[in-house]
Amino acid sequence: MAVVAVTGLRVEAKIARKAGLSVVCAGGIPAHTAAALGQAIGGRAPSGLISFGISGGLAPGLTPGTLILADGVLTADGARHPVDAAWRARLQAKIGAVLGGDVLGGDAIVTAAAAKATLYAQGHPVAVDLESTVVAEAAERAGLPFLVIRAIADPAERGLPPAASLRLKPDGRPDLHAVFRSVLTEPAQIAALVRLARDTRHALRALTRAVATLGPLLSAPL
Image (tube, rainbow, N blue to C red):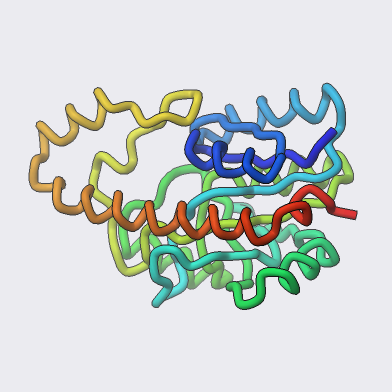
């Protein structure tokens, strides 16, 4: 079976499929992601896993669109899971300048800048996302190589508006009705939502460029 890219957003999944990757997309809910990935691995074991998509910045100074090829994943319980070093090195050699370091696998969106600073102080992860812990732990159980490819959407210094923390639909689409309700309740967040949408586009373009550059290397862990 092909390498499986694990995403939360449907738009991330669309980008990953351009590289010929199989995709598990479960709406950014770790429990749903774990169940879907377990089914994918249990059916016919993939050759590797990739945690793929946008992320929240934790290291100070990272701008939207900064591409991360992580060295490892830190989990909430303090464990660290290194990525496959040889696979990562091949991608690094192809893509050139890219940010390394560890990412934190979270279980909820981190909305406050102060909370991001606190997380950064605990092991200095450069970013946080909702899929990487699931991917790392599944890879360890199945004996599979894995990678983490992420792009910064919201910088560490910036908090997120309330609507940004709303759950996605199970297929990775935003719940527009819930977003509209949130905006009607708190219209002052509109400017922040517009800025977040712009920054997210920067991140998605960075992922698209990475897929175009790395091509077949993404589906060749060995």
